[in-house]
Image 1 (cartoon, chains in turn purple, blue):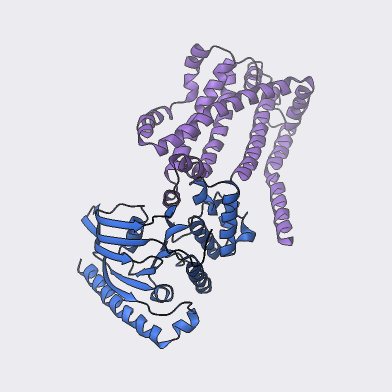
Image 2: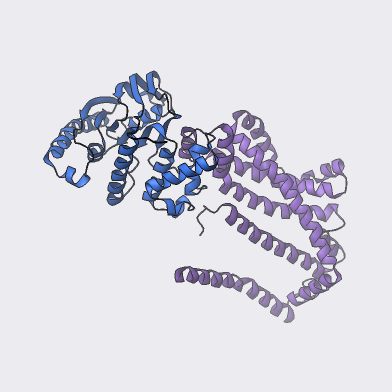
Length: 260
Length: 268
């Protein structure tokens, strides 16, 4: 008992220590600007950004942009990740699928997904769909590659056990291969989530009239540098929050993975 | 359900069994001309140096690999499940609880509901893991994991149990305890057991008969009767003089083989 609570205390302490360096950086930044280093119109102090952040929160503008961006990113992430998992598992199970899919993945994975934006706009127009599609394409590849790697490299003994104990192909798929691949699937999902944020925000630069990406880009065009920083900070915060939530989900879904 | 005395497990007839692999260096003769006849309900051990093909033989018997030539007949008529294997490392699925692992061979065969839970319960009790049913394998010690693997095999009520050095990775105390438990379970269930080991002591303590295998190519060199009556007590047995004589006899055969293998490796 006491060992456990001691460990929890250490963890809390460590998490608090994590805040040390970002806060230190902000303090230095504030001091430097106030001391007259840099032009405050172009490089606002953290206090200026906080002020603007608060104002945008109160007006409801920031909340709306956040909701719009999160919707696009999460919808795109899901639309890309779910087929990524399904096809990745099929690649590991059936050689034919792998032979068809592998070269396509190899060819398309390195293409910058934003380079496809004009094409996607042509196909889907300026509506929500185009943003969701580009995010989905970005999320798809890391998930399919990791899922396949995870499913194809399951320790042989688990396959042997399943065969010896009479597993049908469907049991093999749903109870052995899928779970055996889960840790790597999650690694792929984590990368895909980060990519979804990057692509989603960037797509809003060029092809949206709302969202955090739009806020950043339009503030830049209007030289409202503090509002621009508000957008950047918001994306950073959203990233931290979603990845924390992601870790919690992973902990629940993969209870057997030894925690560090 | 289980009646007294237990019905005997399957007879196994192996005739002219061979296995070759194609490797970079040419054809490897893993097993050559294996002929064995294992009786119903017999505890049959196979000892041999590492690399003699004993695991390959077991995997072929369990249907995990195919022989190149020869036949195997396992007379498991009247049994729903022909065989179950216990692997060297437990091979419990890390994503399933002990209970789910033990029930795996029932789930795959469509045994559900109260029949499944009753049988899992009995198997957990048999190996003393009832309290740990909701644990995941990584929360258990090596000995407990191996107990789980044994429960998973017995729960399917197979005609034959194949065991591939199941206790090799355990410490001496745990190994002794599990060996004694295995013998106790075997005596009450009457199953045919084919047990691979590299330990002569283990083979003599557990087996009714012991086959000695040789390497390059893998062959059965000799089959030795182990005449000690059951139930056996490990400590009493290992300190008796007849045990020592038999151990020495097997060791002479193995020693010759190990030296021969080493000489051929040095020559190569």
